[in-house]
Image (tube, rainbow, N blue to C red; front, side, top):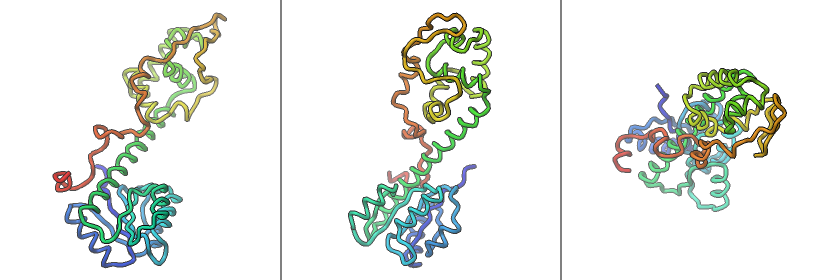
Length: 267
């Protein structure tokens, strides 16, 4: 079972931390409060799902510095920054660094809940992206060098006969390699294979040896010496031109917003 996301509340005033936690607890959300930025950065778990609600002005370090420190530690959790003053330059800096939003004090409860809900959703989507990318990369690592070459040529739209010409293999050998590729990648169709690779940009990030990028021109068969025509693009590519690497970016693919039933009823 996936761990429950936690909203970290960081403010140097305990009364503020307690008030925010009460609001979030009333909506069935899990929280953890901190009054020391340094203690939080030293003890938090970057792998734990959730988001951060932090005050901009604190004595040890301000909210933007906390955000920068998290990024340096590889923690990309969404951040909601609360400020008592609307300094536009600070807002711009924070948003560029990835803050979900800035909220001016005094913050209405419903506004804070909405911002936290958005932050949790972003975190869930980002973690789904990373999990899918890791899953595909692990399957790619299981391929042999030859299987990787066949995979890349299949993804570029070449037929078995054309792949055989490219690699100097018998067509039945290509069919055998292709079958193993499909099994190892846990897919049953070229469309499913392309979908997995395009979501994670796996081919461009991990090119195999001896397979040069295709320029759309014809090439010479290594076995016969005759030109081998290459198709424009595999037809399956056209179905996924608008697929983002952000797996789960659409509402139908994203994990459900991790919030309480009451928030869902009010949305």
